[in-house]
Image (tube, rainbow, N blue to C red; front, side, top):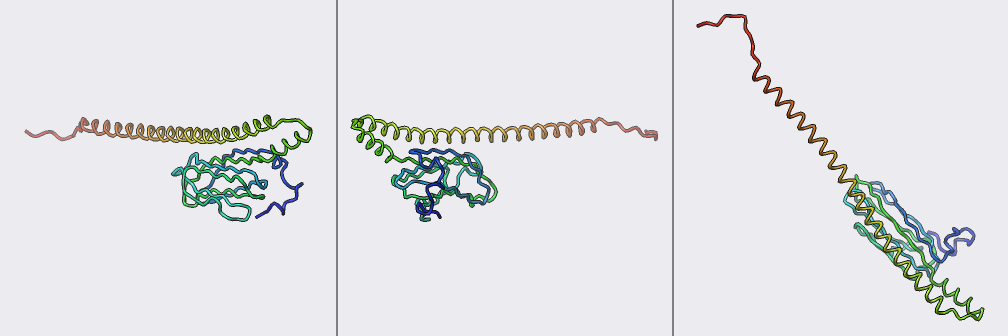
Length: 215
């Protein structure tokens, strides 16, 4: 497991240095498998992770988060959705793992939403403004509040998209289920009708014999 001191600054992805990073994924987890995804987090940042099973099997999966030391900070639980927040994350790569080992036959489609917010960047911005002898405390405070509200809104939108995707997947599954059963019932009706017609015609079959009837 990588730690912050092990990763040179120039080797980190460019977007990891931004004040805020938000990622929304849809991942496919095979039956009986576990997949882990790694997200680099700056020390002191706020990490938020949520997962939601969209479709597949019983609609549930295991979800866990490990910190850069390999410690499980969010233990596995078999459920349809879950989230985790770390307001003062340690620097390094966090592992977000989705476990589908309890499901031996059904794969799962999972929505994974991750945000990393560096609120201290706003404090640095305030200090830079103060160095320029410009009093912008109210302005920067408003920006910080807006940033927090936007983050909360993004989380709410992620949950809404998860619910919408799951409902849409459920509609598709129900439509396929109804279509298959309708076709099966039509075939059964056609087969039953054919059998009935066959036996009814057999009742009216008249066999003519060559012998004469005796009185």
